[in-house]
Image (cartoon, rainbow, N blue to C red; front, top):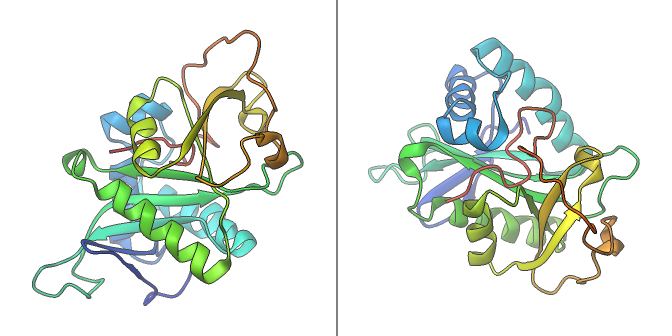
Length: 227
């Protein structure tokens, strides 16, 4: 996660690592995690200052990349005057592949995304997700990817559908808490018996819907925001 020159290119975007030493990246994370849409889907975040954001990037974010070879990435709008230049690109969102290391973690990573309010409904999230998924399959051989989100978050579901994911229904998401029930999507071609990935085989008999699905209170994983 430390290579400042790393980038994945898509037609309109550059996908790169979030750099803790860049104040602009820390400030962007604060802005992103405090948009009304992010808070509505994930609850109030603890990432409220540049220093807190920097600690998150230096700690958990960097550890996820070190553990799995992937994690949370920044995606930025290319500068038309210099489309390959990361420094002049405009940060607009994050896209992530997350897989925990605790007992009971799912064996496939889940895809997450978040984007600033003013860039929603322009297809940027789908483009970033496609770019990242194509990269990790080509470079790291990661083919199986889950989509997990609060069933009330219809925007996330729309993005997974547009990406060609298959909706396999509700499941208990014990990794996120004993009472968390979420909508589960799988990448096309995966086994629809999601128990092979560590999820329950069947939907819960009764559903008490949680208000939020939040991973450690700050992450955009679990399909937090989508457009």
